[in-house]
Image (cartoon, rainbow over all chains, first blue to last red; front, side, top):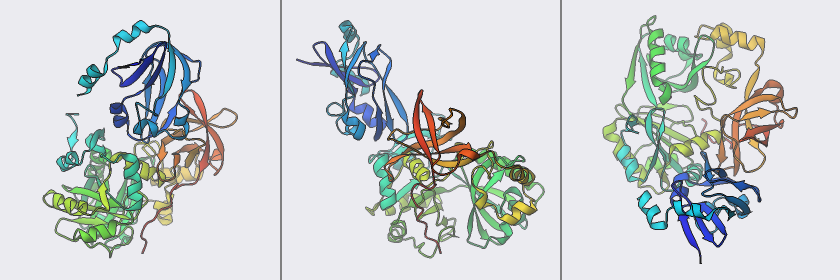
Length: 122
Length: 364
Protein backbone atom coordinates (compact mmCIF):
# COMPACT_ATOMS: atom_id res chain seq x y z
CA UNK A 1 0.00 0.00 0.00
CA UNK A 2 1.59 3.28 -1.03
CA UNK A 3 0.74 6.87 -0.30
CA UNK A 4 1.82 9.91 -2.31
CA UNK A 5 2.64 13.27 -0.78
CA UNK A 6 3.39 16.62 -2.43
CA UNK A 7 5.56 19.63 -1.62
CA UNK A 8 5.14 23.35 -2.23
CA UNK A 9 8.12 23.07 -4.58
CA UNK A 10 6.13 20.74 -6.85
CA UNK A 11 7.84 17.47 -5.96
CA UNK A 12 5.94 14.27 -5.27
CA UNK A 13 7.07 11.48 -2.94
CA UNK A 14 5.46 8.06 -3.06
CA UNK A 15 6.09 6.11 0.15
CA UNK A 16 6.04 2.33 0.42
CA UNK A 17 7.17 1.20 3.86
CA UNK A 18 10.58 2.70 4.62
CA UNK A 19 11.44 3.66 1.06
CA UNK A 20 10.09 6.34 -1.18
CA UNK A 21 10.23 7.37 -4.85
CA UNK A 22 10.58 11.06 -5.68
CA UNK A 23 9.82 13.05 -8.80
CA UNK A 24 8.38 16.34 -10.00
CA UNK A 25 4.71 16.96 -10.69
CA UNK A 26 3.01 17.41 -14.03
CA UNK A 27 2.59 21.09 -13.17
CA UNK A 28 6.35 21.40 -12.59
CA UNK A 29 7.35 19.69 -15.83
CA UNK A 30 4.90 21.86 -17.73
CA UNK A 31 6.40 25.00 -16.21
CA UNK A 32 9.96 23.87 -16.96
CA UNK A 33 9.32 22.88 -20.56
CA UNK A 34 11.28 20.30 -22.55
CA UNK A 35 14.01 18.77 -20.41
CA UNK A 36 17.35 17.99 -22.04
CA UNK A 37 19.46 16.86 -19.08
CA UNK A 38 18.94 15.53 -15.56
CA UNK A 39 21.82 15.62 -13.09
CA UNK A 40 21.18 12.71 -10.72
CA UNK A 41 22.65 12.24 -7.23
CA UNK A 42 25.08 9.46 -6.26
CA UNK A 43 23.53 6.36 -4.79
CA UNK A 44 24.32 6.38 -1.08
CA UNK A 45 24.25 10.17 -0.78
CA UNK A 46 22.48 11.31 2.34
CA UNK A 47 20.05 14.15 1.88
CA UNK A 48 18.48 16.54 4.33
CA UNK A 49 15.09 18.04 3.66
CA UNK A 50 15.58 21.06 1.39
CA UNK A 51 18.93 19.94 -0.06
CA UNK A 52 19.31 20.12 -3.83
CA UNK A 53 19.04 16.49 -4.85
CA UNK A 54 18.70 16.77 -8.61
CA UNK A 55 19.17 19.48 -11.21
CA UNK A 56 16.82 19.36 -14.18
CA UNK A 57 17.81 21.34 -17.25
CA UNK A 58 15.47 22.57 -19.94
CA UNK A 59 16.60 24.08 -23.25
CA UNK A 60 16.61 27.43 -21.50
CA UNK A 61 17.50 27.01 -17.83
CA UNK A 62 18.63 24.80 -14.96
CA UNK A 63 16.34 24.23 -11.96
CA UNK A 64 16.91 22.54 -8.61
CA UNK A 65 14.80 19.70 -7.28
CA UNK A 66 14.90 19.52 -3.48
CA UNK A 67 14.78 16.56 -1.12
CA UNK A 68 11.27 16.62 0.36
CA UNK A 69 12.42 14.78 3.51
CA UNK A 70 15.66 13.45 5.09
CA UNK A 71 17.04 10.15 3.85
CA UNK A 72 19.60 8.24 1.81
CA UNK A 73 19.54 7.79 -1.96
CA UNK A 74 19.10 4.09 -2.77
CA UNK A 75 18.53 4.23 -6.53
CA UNK A 76 18.43 6.75 -9.35
CA UNK A 77 16.48 6.60 -12.62
CA UNK A 78 19.24 5.70 -15.08
CA UNK A 79 16.78 5.83 -17.99
CA UNK A 80 16.84 9.63 -17.71
CA UNK A 81 20.51 9.74 -18.73
CA UNK A 82 19.62 8.84 -22.30
CA UNK A 83 16.04 10.13 -22.30
CA UNK A 84 15.43 13.14 -20.04
CA UNK A 85 12.13 13.77 -21.81
CA UNK A 86 10.58 10.95 -19.76
CA UNK A 87 10.16 13.55 -17.03
CA UNK A 88 7.95 15.55 -19.40
CA UNK A 89 5.99 12.64 -20.80
CA UNK A 90 5.48 10.67 -17.55
CA UNK A 91 6.46 12.85 -14.57
CA UNK A 92 4.73 10.62 -12.05
CA UNK A 93 5.60 7.34 -13.78
CA UNK A 94 8.69 6.45 -15.83
CA UNK A 95 10.04 9.94 -15.26
CA UNK A 96 10.70 9.42 -11.54
CA UNK A 97 14.03 10.83 -10.32
CA UNK A 98 15.38 8.92 -7.33
CA UNK A 99 14.47 6.49 -4.56
CA UNK A 100 15.41 7.05 -0.97
CA UNK A 101 15.33 5.37 2.42
CA UNK A 102 13.52 7.63 4.86
CA UNK A 103 15.24 8.53 8.09
CA UNK A 104 12.36 10.36 9.74
CA UNK A 105 8.87 9.34 8.65
CA UNK A 106 7.30 11.99 10.86
CA UNK A 107 8.45 14.63 8.32
CA UNK A 108 5.82 13.31 5.92
CA UNK A 109 3.18 14.82 8.14
CA UNK A 110 4.19 18.30 6.98
CA UNK A 111 3.61 17.52 3.30
CA UNK A 112 0.40 17.89 1.29
CA UNK A 113 -1.88 15.15 0.06
CA UNK A 114 -3.02 15.18 -3.55
CA UNK A 115 -6.19 17.20 -2.91
CA UNK A 116 -4.33 19.88 -0.98
CA UNK A 117 -1.65 20.07 -3.70
CA UNK A 118 -4.21 20.37 -6.47
CA UNK A 119 -5.91 23.15 -4.55
CA UNK A 120 -2.56 24.91 -4.14
CA UNK A 121 -1.91 25.11 -7.89
CA UNK A 122 -5.49 25.76 -8.95
CA UNK B 1 5.00 41.60 -13.86
CA UNK B 2 2.95 44.81 -13.65
CA UNK B 3 5.87 47.13 -14.41
CA UNK B 4 6.56 45.34 -17.68
CA UNK B 5 5.38 46.64 -21.03
CA UNK B 6 2.93 44.51 -22.97
CA UNK B 7 3.40 43.82 -26.66
CA UNK B 8 0.69 45.45 -28.80
CA UNK B 9 -0.44 41.96 -29.86
CA UNK B 10 -0.41 40.53 -26.29
CA UNK B 11 -4.02 39.34 -26.57
CA UNK B 12 -3.15 37.22 -29.61
CA UNK B 13 -0.29 35.58 -27.72
CA UNK B 14 -2.59 34.82 -24.80
CA UNK B 15 -5.09 33.32 -27.21
CA UNK B 16 -2.28 31.12 -28.57
CA UNK B 17 -1.48 29.81 -25.07
CA UNK B 18 1.78 31.71 -24.59
CA UNK B 19 3.80 31.37 -21.43
CA UNK B 20 5.22 34.81 -20.67
CA UNK B 21 8.43 35.98 -19.08
CA UNK B 22 10.27 39.24 -18.58
CA UNK B 23 12.88 40.33 -21.12
CA UNK B 24 14.40 43.81 -21.44
CA UNK B 25 11.45 45.37 -19.65
CA UNK B 26 8.85 43.61 -21.78
CA UNK B 27 6.37 40.85 -20.99
CA UNK B 28 7.38 38.49 -23.76
CA UNK B 29 5.98 35.16 -24.97
CA UNK B 30 8.69 32.63 -24.03
CA UNK B 31 6.97 29.63 -25.55
CA UNK B 32 3.57 28.46 -26.71
CA UNK B 33 1.68 25.19 -26.35
CA UNK B 34 4.04 23.23 -28.60
CA UNK B 35 7.02 23.96 -26.33
CA UNK B 36 10.49 25.27 -27.09
CA UNK B 37 11.86 22.06 -28.64
CA UNK B 38 9.08 21.69 -31.24
CA UNK B 39 9.04 25.44 -31.90
CA UNK B 40 12.77 25.44 -32.60
CA UNK B 41 12.62 22.46 -34.96
CA UNK B 42 9.50 23.79 -36.68
CA UNK B 43 11.31 27.02 -37.55
CA UNK B 44 14.16 25.15 -39.23
CA UNK B 45 11.74 22.86 -41.09
CA UNK B 46 8.85 25.14 -42.03
CA UNK B 47 8.11 28.69 -40.87
CA UNK B 48 8.18 30.24 -37.42
CA UNK B 49 6.38 33.51 -36.62
CA UNK B 50 8.00 35.73 -33.99
CA UNK B 51 6.63 38.90 -32.43
CA UNK B 52 9.71 41.05 -31.94
CA UNK B 53 7.86 44.33 -31.42
CA UNK B 54 10.01 44.92 -28.34
CA UNK B 55 12.79 45.85 -30.75
CA UNK B 56 12.98 49.50 -31.75
CA UNK B 57 12.86 51.05 -35.20
CA UNK B 58 14.39 54.44 -35.81
CA UNK B 59 14.14 56.47 -38.97
CA UNK B 60 17.09 58.73 -39.73
CA UNK B 61 16.22 61.45 -42.23
CA UNK B 62 17.98 64.46 -43.67
CA UNK B 63 20.72 65.67 -46.01
CA UNK B 64 23.40 64.43 -43.58
CA UNK B 65 21.78 61.05 -42.89
CA UNK B 66 24.55 58.98 -44.51
CA UNK B 67 27.35 61.06 -43.02
CA UNK B 68 25.72 60.88 -39.60
CA UNK B 69 25.40 57.08 -39.66
CA UNK B 70 28.96 56.70 -40.90
CA UNK B 71 30.07 58.67 -37.87
CA UNK B 72 27.84 56.83 -35.40
CA UNK B 73 28.65 53.36 -36.81
CA UNK B 74 31.70 51.74 -38.46
CA UNK B 75 29.62 51.59 -41.61
CA UNK B 76 30.03 52.99 -45.13
CA UNK B 77 26.51 54.42 -45.25
CA UNK B 78 27.16 56.52 -48.35
CA UNK B 79 28.07 53.37 -50.31
CA UNK B 80 24.98 51.50 -49.14
CA UNK B 81 22.57 51.18 -52.05
CA UNK B 82 18.87 51.90 -51.65
CA UNK B 83 17.05 48.87 -50.33
CA UNK B 84 20.21 47.33 -48.89
CA UNK B 85 20.76 46.40 -45.24
CA UNK B 86 23.94 46.00 -43.20
CA UNK B 87 24.70 44.56 -39.80
CA UNK B 88 26.65 47.14 -37.81
CA UNK B 89 27.26 48.42 -34.28
CA UNK B 90 27.22 51.48 -32.11
CA UNK B 91 30.62 51.78 -30.44
CA UNK B 92 31.70 53.92 -27.53
CA UNK B 93 34.99 55.86 -27.47
CA UNK B 94 36.80 52.74 -26.24
CA UNK B 95 35.33 50.66 -29.12
CA UNK B 96 33.06 48.88 -26.64
CA UNK B 97 29.84 47.70 -28.23
CA UNK B 98 26.85 49.84 -27.11
CA UNK B 99 24.50 47.87 -29.35
CA UNK B 100 24.38 45.90 -32.57
CA UNK B 101 22.02 47.09 -35.28
CA UNK B 102 20.68 46.52 -38.74
CA UNK B 103 20.83 49.67 -40.86
CA UNK B 104 18.89 49.85 -44.13
CA UNK B 105 18.97 52.57 -46.72
CA UNK B 106 15.35 53.38 -47.52
CA UNK B 107 16.00 56.42 -49.69
CA UNK B 108 18.57 58.98 -50.77
CA UNK B 109 18.36 60.74 -47.41
CA UNK B 110 16.51 58.16 -45.36
CA UNK B 111 17.68 55.14 -43.34
CA UNK B 112 15.90 52.67 -41.04
CA UNK B 113 17.76 51.41 -37.97
CA UNK B 114 16.60 48.35 -36.01
CA UNK B 115 17.95 48.27 -32.44
CA UNK B 116 17.71 45.89 -29.49
CA UNK B 117 14.90 46.41 -26.99
CA UNK B 118 17.09 46.64 -23.92
CA UNK B 119 19.33 49.26 -25.51
CA UNK B 120 16.73 51.36 -27.30
CA UNK B 121 16.73 54.31 -24.89
CA UNK B 122 20.51 54.28 -24.55
CA UNK B 123 20.86 54.15 -28.33
CA UNK B 124 18.45 57.00 -28.80
CA UNK B 125 20.26 59.25 -26.33
CA UNK B 126 23.61 58.36 -27.85
CA UNK B 127 22.37 59.03 -31.39
CA UNK B 128 20.65 62.27 -30.39
CA UNK B 129 23.88 63.46 -28.81
CA UNK B 130 25.85 62.74 -32.00
CA UNK B 131 23.10 64.16 -34.23
CA UNK B 132 23.66 67.69 -32.93
CA UNK B 133 26.52 68.13 -35.40
CA UNK B 134 24.51 66.92 -38.38
CA UNK B 135 21.48 68.03 -40.33
CA UNK B 136 19.34 64.97 -39.52
CA UNK B 137 16.11 64.05 -37.78
CA UNK B 138 15.81 60.93 -35.69
CA UNK B 139 12.32 59.50 -35.25
CA UNK B 140 11.18 56.43 -33.36
CA UNK B 141 8.74 54.50 -35.55
CA UNK B 142 5.70 53.07 -33.80
CA UNK B 143 5.30 49.69 -35.50
CA UNK B 144 4.57 46.08 -34.82
CA UNK B 145 7.64 44.06 -35.81
CA UNK B 146 7.17 40.47 -36.87
CA UNK B 147 9.70 37.93 -38.12
CA UNK B 148 8.77 34.94 -40.23
CA UNK B 149 11.72 32.56 -40.38
CA UNK B 150 12.33 29.24 -42.06
CA UNK B 151 12.46 27.61 -45.50
CA UNK B 152 8.69 28.06 -46.10
CA UNK B 153 8.60 31.71 -45.04
CA UNK B 154 8.49 33.18 -48.55
CA UNK B 155 5.71 30.87 -49.66
CA UNK B 156 3.65 31.40 -46.48
CA UNK B 157 3.84 35.18 -46.95
CA UNK B 158 2.80 34.84 -50.56
CA UNK B 159 -0.28 32.94 -49.38
CA UNK B 160 -0.96 35.73 -46.89
CA UNK B 161 -0.95 38.26 -49.72
CA UNK B 162 2.58 39.59 -49.29
CA UNK B 163 4.95 38.87 -52.16
CA UNK B 164 8.54 39.38 -50.98
CA UNK B 165 10.06 36.88 -53.41
CA UNK B 166 11.98 39.70 -55.10
CA UNK B 167 14.12 40.28 -52.01
CA UNK B 168 17.42 38.54 -51.35
CA UNK B 169 19.27 38.29 -48.03
CA UNK B 170 19.83 41.73 -46.47
CA UNK B 171 17.69 43.66 -48.92
CA UNK B 172 14.57 45.59 -48.03
CA UNK B 173 11.35 46.99 -49.42
CA UNK B 174 8.45 49.19 -48.34
CA UNK B 175 5.56 47.29 -49.93
CA UNK B 176 2.77 49.41 -48.42
CA UNK B 177 2.38 52.74 -46.66
CA UNK B 178 4.28 52.57 -43.33
CA UNK B 179 5.39 48.98 -43.98
CA UNK B 180 9.06 48.05 -43.95
CA UNK B 181 10.28 44.55 -44.77
CA UNK B 182 13.71 42.99 -44.99
CA UNK B 183 14.89 39.53 -45.95
CA UNK B 184 16.80 38.92 -42.75
CA UNK B 185 16.37 37.58 -39.25
CA UNK B 186 18.24 36.06 -36.38
CA UNK B 187 17.79 32.31 -36.65
CA UNK B 188 20.29 31.36 -39.37
CA UNK B 189 17.37 30.51 -41.66
CA UNK B 190 15.99 32.29 -44.68
CA UNK B 191 13.22 34.61 -43.59
CA UNK B 192 11.82 38.09 -43.25
CA UNK B 193 11.28 40.85 -40.76
CA UNK B 194 8.12 42.87 -41.31
CA UNK B 195 7.39 46.19 -39.62
CA UNK B 196 3.82 47.43 -40.03
CA UNK B 197 1.20 49.58 -38.30
CA UNK B 198 -0.71 47.97 -35.45
CA UNK B 199 -4.03 48.42 -37.28
CA UNK B 200 -2.87 46.05 -40.01
CA UNK B 201 -0.80 43.66 -37.90
CA UNK B 202 -3.54 41.44 -36.56
CA UNK B 203 -4.86 40.82 -40.08
CA UNK B 204 -1.45 39.80 -41.37
CA UNK B 205 -0.84 37.52 -38.38
CA UNK B 206 -4.19 35.78 -38.85
CA UNK B 207 -3.50 35.37 -42.56
CA UNK B 208 -0.07 33.85 -41.85
CA UNK B 209 -1.41 31.52 -39.18
CA UNK B 210 -4.17 30.12 -41.41
CA UNK B 211 -1.28 28.39 -43.19
CA UNK B 212 -0.50 25.26 -41.20
CA UNK B 213 3.19 25.57 -42.10
CA UNK B 214 3.37 28.63 -39.84
CA UNK B 215 3.14 28.85 -36.05
CA UNK B 216 4.06 31.24 -33.25
CA UNK B 217 7.56 30.78 -31.85
CA UNK B 218 8.57 32.16 -28.46
CA UNK B 219 11.65 33.92 -27.20
CA UNK B 220 13.13 30.70 -25.76
CA UNK B 221 13.38 29.10 -29.19
CA UNK B 222 14.54 32.41 -30.68
CA UNK B 223 17.47 32.17 -28.28
CA UNK B 224 18.34 28.53 -29.05
CA UNK B 225 18.02 29.21 -32.80
CA UNK B 226 20.36 32.21 -32.75
CA UNK B 227 22.84 30.36 -30.53
CA UNK B 228 23.02 27.38 -32.91
CA UNK B 229 23.47 29.92 -35.72
CA UNK B 230 26.41 31.44 -33.82
CA UNK B 231 24.79 34.88 -33.61
CA UNK B 232 25.57 37.24 -30.74
CA UNK B 233 23.04 38.41 -28.20
CA UNK B 234 23.86 41.91 -26.99
CA UNK B 235 24.03 42.01 -23.21
CA UNK B 236 25.42 38.47 -23.16
CA UNK B 237 27.94 37.78 -25.92
CA UNK B 238 28.75 41.39 -26.67
CA UNK B 239 28.50 44.50 -24.53
CA UNK B 240 30.42 47.68 -23.76
CA UNK B 241 33.25 45.63 -22.24
CA UNK B 242 33.80 43.75 -25.51
CA UNK B 243 34.96 45.11 -28.87
CA UNK B 244 34.35 44.11 -32.50
CA UNK B 245 37.82 42.53 -32.84
CA UNK B 246 37.50 40.18 -29.87
CA UNK B 247 33.87 39.48 -30.68
CA UNK B 248 34.81 38.31 -34.18
CA UNK B 249 32.68 41.00 -35.79
CA UNK B 250 35.35 42.72 -37.90
CA UNK B 251 33.70 41.27 -41.02
CA UNK B 252 30.98 43.89 -40.42
CA UNK B 253 33.49 46.76 -40.61
CA UNK B 254 34.86 47.62 -44.07
CA UNK B 255 38.66 47.54 -44.12
CA UNK B 256 38.85 51.06 -45.47
CA UNK B 257 36.81 52.36 -42.55
CA UNK B 258 39.09 50.56 -40.07
CA UNK B 259 42.09 52.25 -41.71
CA UNK B 260 40.67 55.71 -42.30
CA UNK B 261 38.65 55.98 -39.10
CA UNK B 262 36.14 58.79 -38.73
CA UNK B 263 33.60 56.89 -36.63
CA UNK B 264 33.12 56.82 -32.87
CA UNK B 265 35.56 54.30 -31.39
CA UNK B 266 37.83 54.22 -34.46
CA UNK B 267 41.02 55.23 -32.65
CA UNK B 268 40.46 52.73 -29.86
CA UNK B 269 39.67 49.95 -32.32
CA UNK B 270 42.85 50.64 -34.26
CA UNK B 271 44.85 50.53 -31.04
CA UNK B 272 43.20 47.27 -29.95
CA UNK B 273 44.07 45.69 -33.29
CA UNK B 274 47.67 46.97 -33.21
CA UNK B 275 48.21 45.70 -29.65
CA UNK B 276 46.69 42.33 -30.52
CA UNK B 277 43.48 41.02 -29.03
CA UNK B 278 43.69 39.16 -25.72
CA UNK B 279 40.54 37.08 -25.97
CA UNK B 280 38.23 36.04 -28.76
CA UNK B 281 34.69 34.79 -29.07
CA UNK B 282 34.44 31.11 -29.99
CA UNK B 283 31.87 28.33 -30.22
CA UNK B 284 32.01 25.72 -27.47
CA UNK B 285 30.69 22.17 -27.46
CA UNK B 286 30.39 20.34 -24.13
CA UNK B 287 31.25 16.62 -24.30
CA UNK B 288 28.13 14.97 -22.91
CA UNK B 289 24.53 16.04 -22.74
CA UNK B 290 24.85 18.49 -19.87
CA UNK B 291 24.33 22.09 -20.97
CA UNK B 292 26.97 24.62 -19.95
CA UNK B 293 25.38 28.02 -19.48
CA UNK B 294 26.30 31.70 -19.40
CA UNK B 295 28.67 32.56 -16.55
CA UNK B 296 30.52 29.24 -16.42
CA UNK B 297 34.30 29.66 -16.13
CA UNK B 298 36.59 27.90 -18.59
CA UNK B 299 39.93 26.39 -17.61
CA UNK B 300 42.76 24.76 -19.52
CA UNK B 301 44.30 21.40 -18.59
CA UNK B 302 46.70 23.16 -16.22
CA UNK B 303 43.70 24.44 -14.27
CA UNK B 304 44.27 28.06 -15.29
CA UNK B 305 41.24 30.24 -16.01
CA UNK B 306 41.28 30.99 -19.76
CA UNK B 307 37.78 32.23 -20.43
CA UNK B 308 34.07 32.26 -19.76
CA UNK B 309 30.83 31.12 -21.33
CA UNK B 310 28.53 33.97 -22.43
CA UNK B 311 25.64 31.95 -23.91
CA UNK B 312 24.87 28.30 -23.48
CA UNK B 313 22.02 25.87 -23.69
CA UNK B 314 20.81 22.93 -25.70
CA UNK B 315 20.69 22.90 -29.50
CA UNK B 316 17.53 21.06 -30.54
CA UNK B 317 18.58 20.83 -34.21
CA UNK B 318 22.08 19.52 -33.57
CA UNK B 319 20.91 17.38 -30.64
CA UNK B 320 23.67 18.32 -28.23
CA UNK B 321 24.46 21.21 -25.88
CA UNK B 322 25.88 24.32 -27.55
CA UNK B 323 27.59 27.38 -26.14
CA UNK B 324 29.73 30.35 -27.00
CA UNK B 325 32.08 32.45 -25.00
CA UNK B 326 35.42 34.17 -24.81
CA UNK B 327 38.77 32.41 -24.44
CA UNK B 328 42.38 33.60 -24.42
CA UNK B 329 43.71 33.75 -28.00
CA UNK B 330 46.16 30.92 -27.28
CA UNK B 331 43.23 28.67 -26.31
CA UNK B 332 40.96 29.62 -29.21
CA UNK B 333 41.95 27.12 -31.88
CA UNK B 334 39.19 24.74 -32.98
CA UNK B 335 39.44 21.50 -31.03
CA UNK B 336 41.19 23.01 -27.98
CA UNK B 337 40.17 20.95 -24.96
CA UNK B 338 38.99 22.90 -21.92
CA UNK B 339 36.84 22.28 -18.87
CA UNK B 340 33.83 24.35 -17.80
CA UNK B 341 32.97 24.74 -14.15
CA UNK B 342 29.31 23.84 -13.58
CA UNK B 343 27.99 23.75 -10.00
CA UNK B 344 31.42 22.77 -8.69
CA UNK B 345 32.09 19.97 -11.16
CA UNK B 346 34.18 20.06 -14.32
CA UNK B 347 32.53 19.45 -17.67
CA UNK B 348 34.91 18.73 -20.58
CA UNK B 349 34.28 21.12 -23.47
CA UNK B 350 35.91 21.80 -26.86
CA UNK B 351 36.36 24.91 -28.93
CA UNK B 352 34.00 24.38 -31.87
CA UNK B 353 33.52 26.29 -35.15
CA UNK B 354 30.54 28.64 -35.43
CA UNK B 355 27.83 28.31 -36.54
CA UNK B 356 26.70 24.92 -35.21
CA UNK B 357 23.99 24.77 -37.88
CA UNK B 358 24.85 26.13 -41.35
CA UNK B 359 23.22 29.41 -42.35
CA UNK B 360 20.62 28.99 -45.06
CA UNK B 361 20.17 32.57 -46.20
CA UNK B 362 18.76 33.30 -49.67
CA UNK B 363 21.65 35.19 -51.14
CA UNK B 364 21.26 37.00 -54.44
